[in-house]
Image (cartoon, rainbow, N blue to C red; front, side):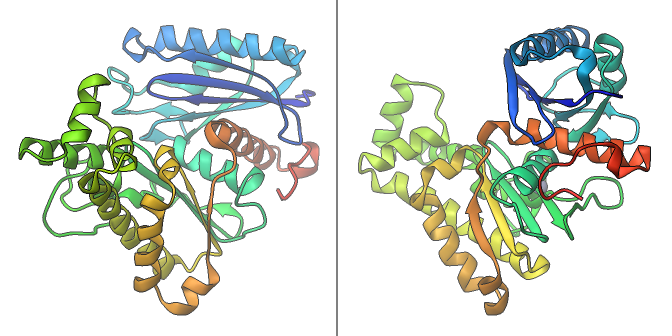
Length: 337
Ligand SMILES: [Zn+2]
């Protein structure tokens, strides 16, 4: 346990990002490889181990100088057991003890946490959320996920499943989310939702420009709709604006229920800027308690695609510190306790 360096792994459905960082959270080496999840856990774990070796070499660090590592993985996860249970984004994976298998392959002790929580912790300790004790993290991409920081600590809930802000109800009828519930925020304001709504309107003969763009560059995605809206297609802009208003309903629910100091927004859809976030903030303000809205800073994430891997390191380090019951034994990120 004499290592002064840390490893962060962001295991995603399509790609894996491995970072080696120092005690201040500065990235010294990194490596990106495709996940190819259908090849099964064995092959993927081999790729993570290979990427870790490459990232460490890149950083000029030997593997035995790495004190601990964290893995950010798609949920659901059994955090205590270090197991990925049945992630929809990793088809064919069931109850994979990823933390133990990675330790066996690399010699580095690893812990596991779900991706949205990792990114939340990353932004809180090292990114746009620094200095806020009560914070919500919301990521808007193909789905909508999130994390909750209360009193500077990740709030996990009864079984580690807290933070699923994409499943705040915003309608009683309408489309379903990835989990099959009708009316979830995710079913109205995610990238998947925007693309689905566009397909629906194209089926009715609408959105000619979006349809043409999708034909040239398939598949039709939220980005296609955004591109068409930027090229002047009013109907496409209307879809994004509508999604923004639903996002605002979700944000207002968060503001009213948690009275946070900050909400950090992240994920690919924030690239739409005012087209999405303008109506979102307008609705959030209209539906929030005035004092709570005045209290909250709504900011964009700073760490981009490194948020989850860096957050996984923060999580791993705080668990190691708790296990050692000697917090002084490890260095600390600025702002960590
Ligand atoms: Zn849902």
